[in-house]
Length: 608
Image (cartoon, rainbow, N blue to C red; front, top):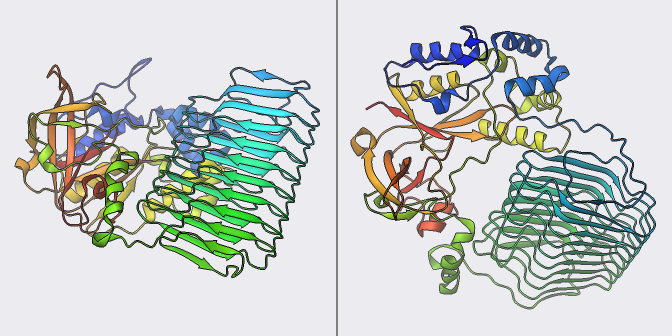
């Protein structure tokens, strides 16, 4: 069946990327099944002329010179270039709503007074904000951010120098990057060389998903500074935090983390050079990584060469599912220190730590696996919903008519993008060895969100396949067709869940159809990756069953959706800490695991 493709001036040019795709589909797939609009609409929107022009630029390594036009015409994910701003704010300001502007020099040499940002870049898609010099050399000045970049998607925020060499005053972030997706937050120099300044983060990256935040130099060479994180990274998913030079050579400072990384899923926290050479500082972690699920934390050089430091972990690493915590150089060569752990978690390693002045009030060493304690097992049921959304994984027995079950949020949270035509992608680098070239093309700064998404996607695409897996990353529908037909043959069909109705609610299962008669079958599933242009990670795994099911409103019994689900029958190679086992209460190889195909993901099978 032909799909009508029209443009403003009439029918689609036969030389456009979309027209080429239609011809390629008919040539490579040998059946008359209707071509799926949900996939065809992801084809490149470029005209034939633009496609030829940008392909020539790509061949000449000159795409970067016309990046804004390329990104706009091709519907790509690109960040704006933040040029130096000429904005001048000589007096204190109160911004009720702020977005899409750049501060090169804000609040330098302020004396007294206050600046307030009530709603800073809230709910934005791809917000990119930069404070190059903020409140430098100020005296007794107060800065307040009530709601900073909350509920954003692919958030990129940077403070190059924040409060450097300031005296007195208060910096207050009430809600910083709350409930954001894929954040990249950087403080290059935060409160360095300050005197008697107070900084507070009441809520930092709470409920964030899959991102990183870093403090390259935090409160270095400060005197009498007080910094407090009331809730840092609480209930976040796969978040990384890095503090490189934290309180280094500071005098009489006071640092408090009231809740750090609690209830998180797979947190990755790294403190390098923490409190090195400090004098008479007080450091306190009231609750560190409590009830977290796995994760990897590292403290390298903690309070080394310090004098009269007071360091207290009231509750360290009391994780639900053990991760790995490493302390290297803990209190080494320090004098007069007091270091205490009231509750210290499991699976932790101390190397080169001070033998004097360190106390452990309660050290927990509970083994994992079948022999874990009843108390720990009891925690499992009460906390599982925090880490695995209800309905994200389920047993095959749930796919029966009349069953009521929760459906997770299946809405696509990725930024909207399109594929590039092959004539362009064939001329672009796509390997970790060519990262610098890609960064140049897409204007990706070092340590930026763009760099991270490029590096992470390439690493996943180049990862060796798991046991029994066949995989390939594709950057065009034609590439996807090639991979699917290479695995399944040319008589194939692609399916996805029809819409997002029922997400985050209870649903009722209506009529169910097993693909290939409900027998074990082969499939190729494709999932989006985060990249400037649309890239899908496609893979085929053995021993699956694929189902279609009508999804009903449990009250009215009306059909609201048509879902596609895949059941993995062999889970023996999955990690024991996989969310499916946390949710369903089993272990690798003991149960099958099913899940819905989310919006804009898809699965290919042999047509039936």
